[in-house]
Image (cartoon, rainbow, N blue to C red; front, top):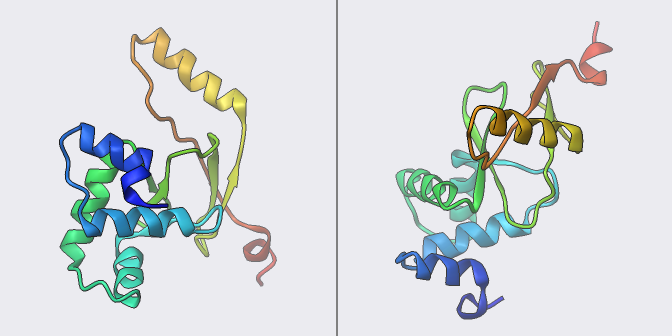
Amino acid sequence: MSKSFDPVFDNLRKRGHRITPQREVILQIFRKLPHGIHLSADELYEKMNELGYNVSLATAYRTLKLLTSFGLLRELTFAEGHKHYELKEDSMPHQHIICVNCNSTLEFEDHFLEELGQKIGVKHNFQVIDSQFKIFGLCPSCQNQD
């Protein structure tokens, strides 16, 4: 999709932000990821360099933070101690179950959890913009290890 006809880029322009090559490439990388794949800043940096974009790790971090603040990416913290990101546009609300041993992550949908998050927000006079429910445990493979 050409960035001149992309509603995401139009939205950024309306907010007064330039469409830099880094922002365009990062959004395209996230759009092409298979469902359920999340990237850390380091992994994004490596992908960009593999594609021939010579950017610094600091630029990757700054751009991820900016795109998250725009609501285009969702920031996730799993068991590994660093953040991961996923594309937020057009994604169904979902939650994550994470293995604390191997860090494998499974996405699942539960509309009850989404509704509960909204109800809790209303109860406390908050406008909910995102809710994240995470379950930590051991995946079947790690349970079967001796």
